[in-house]
Length: 198
Image (cartoon, rainbow, N blue to C red; front, side, top):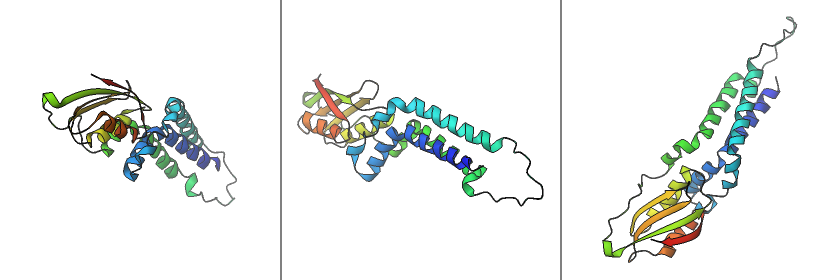
């Protein structure tokens, strides 16, 4: 059936769209253009609907592919299927869709092994600041912001939460400033809304 390829293609597109908010920070990290990282965060509220559309589309494509076909004249020559109409192609698309839909759960593997702790800081030089950040939508966003902060000199710890939209940063005030940390966060494509010194 010629529409099989169309349904597979639609399923693939919706799977990519559903994970675009998590794909963009990874692509930005690899390409070195971190400012584009949050450009697809507007898709996050639609993610559940896109996942549903992906599953429905691929389910329908599999139904069309697996349902019994009407018998054709036994003497008519059998038409060769194009690759895009085969079960193999639909299987590849389905596997890729699953990889895309589950991306937020394993996206951390694309970032360096920075944990939330940096260098030890003397108590008299330590400063604790909380940054309210707009635009983070998943764990991938957290890791992206955290890794950017930890690249600065004198960072003791950076605890980033996309749920709360915050970054709690302890740093050596003799080695870095509140503004440098804010610039590092803003360079990821997410924006600092408010700064609170603790």
